Length: 551
Ligand SMILES: *[C@@H]1O[C@H](CO)[C@@H](O)[C@H](O)[C@H]1NC(C)=O
Ligand SMILES: *[C@@H]1O[C@H](CO)[C@@H](O)[C@H](O)[C@H]1NC(C)=O
Ligand SMILES: *[C@@H]1O[C@H](CO)[C@@H](O)[C@H](O)[C@H]1NC(C)=O
Ligand SMILES: *[C@@H]1O[C@H](CO)[C@@H](O)[C@H](O)[C@H]1NC(C)=O
Ligand SMILES: *[C@@H]1O[C@H](CO)[C@@H](O)[C@H](O)[C@H]1NC(C)=O
Ligand SMILES: *[C@@H]1O[C@H](CO)[C@@H](O)[C@H](O)[C@H]1NC(C)=O
Ligand SMILES: *[C@@H]1O[C@H](CO)[C@@H](O)[C@H](O)[C@H]1NC(C)=O
Image (cartoon, rainbow, N blue to C red; front, top):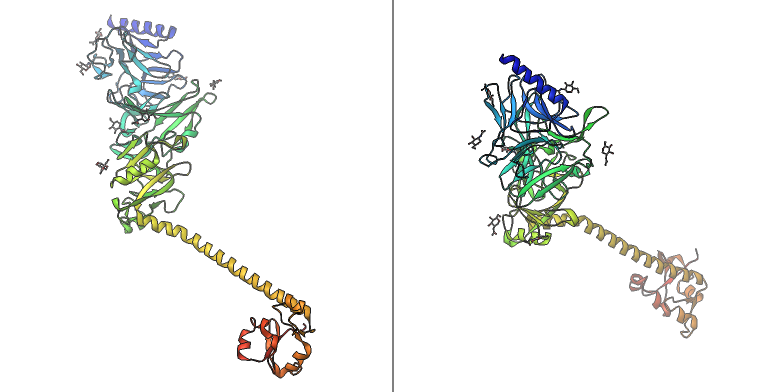
């Protein structure tokens, strides 16, 4: 008699379900395997499922449009091995999953729900995909599935900390495509120093998207360009979290951390009935946390990708040359500390690990620099927020690790180095420029001198040529021409002729740019003006004449 009645009830419930779909259950109702809760607009559905070819039964939430895309799983670690499961909400507002012997396989019991005076609790599946348990009296939920994420982040879901309750929400991937059990891989907010987004395997950071700079996680500048996923980061006394919103609620999107630890965003394509990837995470060498060790930068467009920061040298040059970067770099010149240090500006970078950092929202960059200089253990500083030209102060008090040169955007980082390192780099940088300036100035001066000289010679030559062989000795110093041509002594042809033995070649001393030079028998009175160009001659030979020949 027992079996038929159970079957009867089951059939009756199935009938009820097909006629009216529920989005809410109360303590007097329950869900059996095969039945589901459906959110008001049909976006999400809750029920029992088996992943892939597995026979194990789980309670989960999936998309209405894609019933094999599970976004949340209740009993991740404790599957049922038959179809006898029963899902309900208790009078105390606790969700429970019972097996055929009424044993609790899974429950939502937490310190938050336990011990309260609960009246008429309900569990409702919202259109956002959130399963919310509420007390009839209060608005705030007793429990919600969004606070206990599985591997999927839906719009409006928060990843991070509720500082009041101490809740740390993070994503943990499935162990495998057919095993929803929690794997070692998780994505969440690390709360040391300035909070940063990290992907961990166990306790080890694998990938570090990093701290929020007002626009994006420092290592993921392309995030802000995605028109679909609008990320936001909230940090106040009550909570620290990030989430994303979508501009159009009728578009289905999800971000999932898959079993291999890769996080990816998808959008549902209605016409193809499939999920299309819309965000990709960086997966090159430089994405591996601390790939180059301390005080080194990783640049995927360089070969090798790792380089010590300026003023730093490989800790183990042998390993470094063998492309084992893990040892990183050490300071080449010790800091002067109070005796004066300076800062090197790195642009377009992903900021280093902030787990040992300190920050202040209101300080200017100048104040930030001064504060860093005052404390010898301060290694670097930067703006906290890059919006509106930058604001706030972020200081690092530990070795700088996981600094990446980004291929787009990126931030400014000021790294502390000894003053001598700055001088050295300054000199090297300016040497080339100074050298060029010197060469240019010298060339210019030389050119000018040559031009002036050339001009002077040219003018003189032209003036002399104009006179031709019609050389007259202007003994008459009052002559107007002479006064005008003070620099150009002109001699009477006969005087010259006499003086040079009629231009005898034996009297010729040589030829210069000006013409031929002849030895003269006696000193010519009006020789004075010409001496400048033939000075050495004049000193050697008391008697000579400088004379222009016709070309
Ligand atoms: C999922 O949907 C497909 C087609 O829409 C249907 O054949 C299948 O039975 C559904 N599975 C579940 C568990 O509802
Ligand atoms: C399980 O509990 C329900 C009431 O919640 C009860 O009717 C049923 O008999 C119990 N089944 C077993 C096997 O204890
Ligand atoms: C919930 O937890 C409290 C203590 O944390 C315990 O007393 C209570 O029995 C639990 N309830 C269920 C249904 O597991
Ligand atoms: C996620 O939470 C688990 C358990 O609280 C913790 O061990 C793990 O470190 C967290 N992961 C991240 C990335 O914060
Ligand atoms: C939202 O998306 C749906 C489906 O893509 C489209 O029909 C609708 O016009 C969009 N609404 C807005 C406000 O963009
Ligand atoms: C920092 O600035 C905010 C507004 O920009 C202000 O509300 C806050 O009081 C300031 N804090 C300090 C310590 O000055
Ligand atoms: C320097 O900063 C560290 C870390 O914040 C702090 O512990 C130390 O007291 C500071 N030292 C001085 C002299 O301010």
